[in-house]
Amino acid sequence: MTKYIFVTGGVVSSIGKGITTASLGRLLRNRGYTVAPVKLDPYINVDAGTMNPYQHGEVFVTEDGAETDLDLGHYERFMDVSCSFGSSVTTGKVYQSVIAAERRGDYLGGTVQVIPHVTNEIKRRIVTLAKEQEADVVIAEIGGTVGDIESLPFLEAIRQMQIDAGKENTLFVHVTLVPTVGPWAEVKTKPTQHSVYKLREIGIAPDVLICRSDVDLPEDVREKISLFCGVRPEAVIESRSVPTIYEVPVAYERLGLGELVCQKLGLEPTRNDFASWEALVDTLKNPEHECTIAVVGKYTSNGDAYKSISEALVHAGIPHKAKVNVKWIESDTLETGKDIRSVLGAVDGLVVAPGFGLRGIEGKIEAVRYARESGLPFLGICLGLQIAVIEFARNVCGLTGANSEEMEDSPAYPVIHLLPEQRGVTEKGASMRLGSYPCNLVNGTLGAKLYESTKITERHRHRYEVNNDFREKLQEHGLVISGVSPDYRLVEMIEMPGHPYFVGTQAHPEFKSRPNRPHPLFAGLVGAALKRIEAKASVA
Image (cartoon, rainbow, N blue to C red; front, side, top):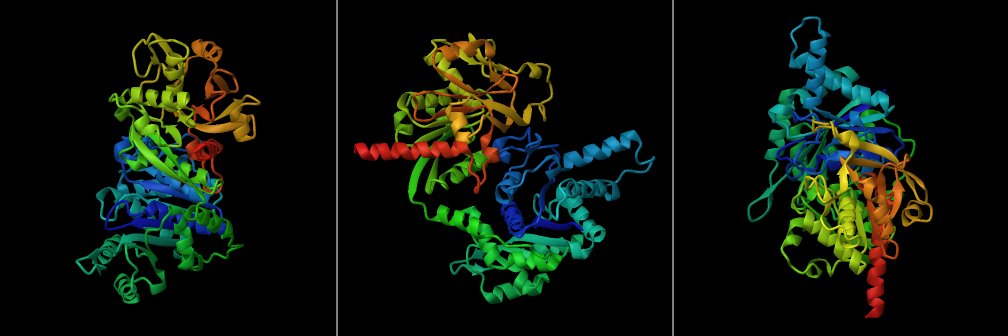
């Protein structure tokens, strides 16, 4: 029977439930189990697709085109699994289904209530995911903090799951904060106690406590937490910050969390292969080389807005045994007339990140121009490819006024235009070109060399594309269209011959990068950056 692990959080938000959930999944995956992660988000939005990246962080896109919370990115990266529509459950989705059922008359005239109708729909989605993915274990993270009004239906649903699935098949993990106060950094357990009391009021008794702390927890503190919270001492797990998030599973393994979870759920591990994960962590902690990659974007003031890009750059350093430092640059700061060399002259590579809207576009164009002219290794992602095409059209093809229809009504040369199938779309939610699409790479191009294949698939999230009316003009002036859709209708990848590394992709390769399988476009960028450093050193 499928086992269920439910991860809740207390005291404060952003405490690390997502990393804890992902790390738990890694521990179970190392033991040979099939794990299906799911995020239960209490917001009323149907999905994350229309949310402001400043407030919510990046929108992570799954293979089947779901626009989800960034925590699903952690799940995929740590567990090396592919999430789906069913891996993201929101209040909006739940109520949408319940109301649709009521309109159809499915409830036979009964009064529709939170209990049982809403909670049943939440449980149905969790169980359906388990069946669809044939999961040995489902790990469900409940968004928000215990005590939030909007989280109550989800907490009630997982309380009921303990009855439905059986206590022997369910495990409650509570992530909490153990702060220190005063000049002597006295450890305080009261916030954790109150957080657990809140859970107990709902009818949930945690089996494991993950205690986030800036200091080592003395044995007497752990015993106190155990006594007041009703959790065995060995299930009070200390969780301190580590140099890299990929070390968290290693720390949990050493503290016995994997064995504890298996014992409580009656799981017999078929193996416990942790050596490869420890090896990549060792590489991250002890690099032999170092480089700096600038990421020019529109939302860089929120580090979570480009979370998958920053993690993909970390992954890209692993095969090169290199530490990758990221220099975040707001694109509109490049529009002040300041010499761009003073901003990008000291970096070793450039990523122009995705985004929407007019703000900061000219700054991105200047960044691409500098990379093209100076030989700075460059990777353009989604809007980054479009910016590269606009810059090339203006400054190489001589098409003054070239622009995107997204940025300007009726530009002189609309080298980027709205996808034809998007012209009748009026609703914003889940209406872009979303999810995984195939791409044919031209044999002999850098793209084909990096992927070691001419047939690839990548995830997408966009409405605008390269205008085919200008495709021939761009190619005549030297731009290589190295990847196209199978019907040859859409430009999916571009590159610049003679440049050390100049690649643009309409896709979002960052979503498929893993620490154990770095994405080839990012690995290629870091490799080119390291060669640039080496070349500079040899000249000096």
